[in-house]
Length: 289
Image 1 (tube, rainbow, N blue to C red):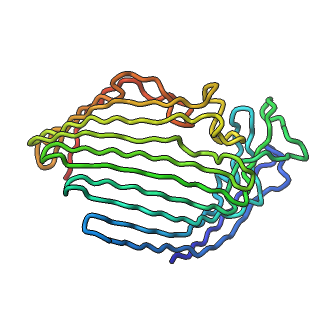
Image 2: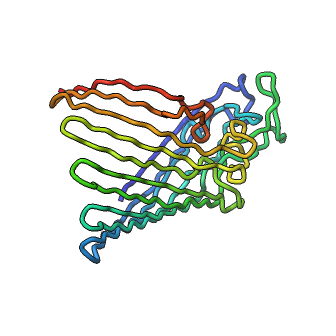
């Protein structure tokens, strides 16, 4: 169990934006907790059950920021309530033949008073002029309920004393239940597969990072997924192939060389305004004392 108390105070220069209030003050408390159960029905099987509750008080970014995003301006809102989370998670893991480990996790989070960005009225109007440009007005408000759920799967194995394999994949969906709309900030399916080979002081690793499409039909309607940065159909999927070599020169020092994005793929990470690096080389020395 945990007791949390948060206080926030923010004041505004109304010469910058003529808000109907000059300050925001909140004082919120909550009791949260978690409970976990581990079951081992057979020697090679593990089952984990976790239930928990969470609480997030609106921060200064939620309540007090004035910023533009594409054709929208987000303005402060005074009456945002804390959001509460009720989480459930089930993990099933099995060890096969003593060296292959497979696991799957399903999870769900129910949010009440979820903080979401929505259309807002400023002095009774849905648009306003700011720094010489007109924008549609938005603000962070509370949705009654939202649901985030997903699955994570992993497979890993030490194929022999030198060779190892690991692969993970994650899939998440989110929905604003109150308004029957997609929830913002939900990433598309993503994962990584790694093959590593170690011999004496040398570690070699090749890994594939991949990210699926984020289609426009899955975007939040209020701009949280940065639609203006996407293509006509959404954010394209992408993958990169990468290699890394580490030489452990001694107990306290190691040398590293890597080539990332070997095939020089052009892509933008989900909801990013900046393209990721193309083919690039990394050289490093790591020392510990």
